[in-house]
Length: 181
Image (cartoon, rainbow, N blue to C red; front, side, top):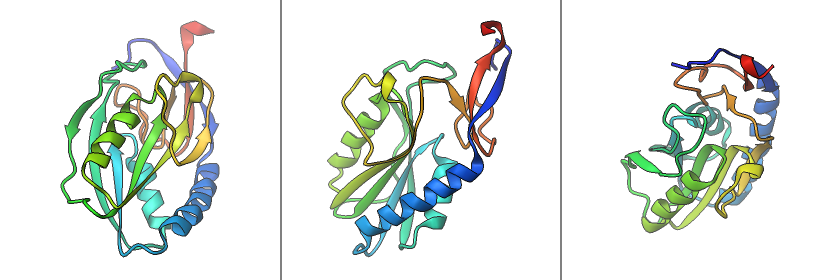
């Protein structure tokens, strides 16, 4: 549970997120139009809302799987140590894969998971992140598609949490700690 009081200011509206997902799905469809089935792999837990909306909008046959990785715990800062808490259940060798991330911050988690997925031998792999925070990048990694580039703010909502709270917000909000005012 957070120890400091905070408020959440809306940064990206639910309507803006839905419109951007529609745009991204057109691009994803163009990339994977020849696939017999796209394996959409979500990075848990933060991507679960994004992946649900994304696969509903995709006009492709899809299979959904998940990897759970963590480098934050209940903190607002990355530990830079990526732990895999749950691996894929299905086989992705020689299959087309779309890796779905909620936010690329330091880049450690995405880079680590890309390595794990590539080691499993997919036919083709692309990555998508709802949010990108390039000002915080510490490793050289970029998603193939990005929903929104955001400033160096701690955000919640639309699946993204702070100490396991606020995932259920329908928008992306900026956390503002009250003693900072």
